[in-house]
Structures are given as structure tokens and as C-alpha cells.
Image 1: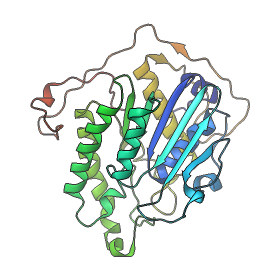
Image 2: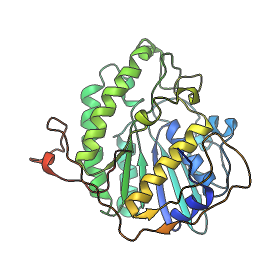
Image 3: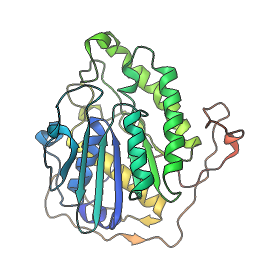
Length: 308
């Protein structure tokens, strides 16, 4: 698969407001997106590993991070924002899909500028507790329900499924009390992905299956068994932007940059508007989670939700 170029990303997201919500992997997604709209370059290892810094590639730290207390707990906060003449990208670090802090973020959406694109995931921190199943499922219902109410219909919300975990993992979410759960988490992620993906679809969100996309790209996963390298993150960015382009009815001409290549002198092609955006119909399986208060979600057709 080929990557989206700097010029394509910059033109596709021209005058767009993008919000990225999630954990440290989502932070790297935000960083790669910010980098790509400015230049044809990959994230460095130092940039991938850094957190809470005052500035990254012309962005600014809005809240938390080194402005507060740096730690690996569930109460850690980090809000970042990149703004140029024609792009606005914001990142919120979250460790739970629904909490008092998430409610405050949703209030920002209700009373502030409405994003054009929301890219969200929260899973590994949520399922690292000893009895996660019921709490995670209920919190997903609450989040999707309130997110749908807070955003206008034209906002594109993409729920990305969690990427494959390694057999041996290390991470800030593995506090001593639950270290014994580490070998099981890679299997719990599969169950959580199924539930969150089908529920997100039932609530009218788009779903991007990164677990499927990276099942044969494990050589791009880092030694901690959780995080991924710069090549993987450029692929994530490209998948996201290609998904958004299809949803917005924009044709991205086939670029020439292949994942893993870092050559200069890339030929950039313009982003062209599609004449007639395609509309895909997706039917839910019979036995899947449904939104609270929904009596017949299985018969709902969802437009522009390709199984990427």
C-alpha cells in the first residue's frame, strides 16, 4: 500500500479542524498528522517517545504535560494543538473512554468550534483493570451516545480498533497490581475490538480496523510490544486520510511514496474533487451490541463506512 503525500494531506485537510482522542499511540497519530501537513518527513524515534513537551513541530502544549505533573497514572492529562493559516489539529490524551474528563472534552465540542474529523480510540487502559468487560461496554455506550449528541451530523467520526499487542508488553498502564494480566491483554484486545467496533457502527460512527491492517506488520512494532515505529504511523495516517477522502467524496490520486521509503524529490499530485461520491451500504450482523434505546438498529443502513 502506498502513502499519502504531504501535498495531498495538506490539500485534503485545507480549512479543516481535526481532533485526535486517545492514548500514547493516538498521540503519535496526532504527531505524524501534524508533521505530514507541513513537510514530507517521518517522525524521529525521539519524537515518537517524547510526551508532554512544550512544543512539537510548531504546535503548542495547551494543558497538562510538562505544565503539570509528569506521571504514568490514569489522571495524566495532555492537550496539544497545531494551528496554521489553513489547518487546525488538536489532541486530547485520555485513559478512559468515558470519565469526568471525557465529559469536559465533550462540553468543549458542544460549546466550542465543531471538528470536521474526529479520530478516536480508547482500549488498552480501559481493559487493564481486573473486571473490565461490563464497565468498558457501558462506558462505550455513554461515550458514543453523548458524542453523537455533541457533534453535528456532518462531522466524520472514525473509531479505530486497537492494534495488535505483543506477547510480552511493557507500558505505563501496567501498574504492579495488574502486571499478571499482561499475557492476557493481547486476547482481551480482540474481544474489546469486536464489541467497540460493532457498537461504534451501530451508533453511526465509521470504523477503521487497524488490528486487521497491521496483523502482518508486526516487525514495525517496538520492543515494548505496544507502540509502533514511524513507518507504521505513516501507514495509519494514510489509512485515515484515505478513509476521510472517500467519505468526503474526494479522489486521492495514487502517490509514488511507498511505506518505508524516505527519499526526497517525491512527485506530488493534486487532490481532485470527485464528481459523485460513492455511498456504501453496510448491514449489521444479527447478534451485535446496539445503542441504548434502539429497537431495530440491525436494519439501519450506514453510508460511507467502508471496511478498511
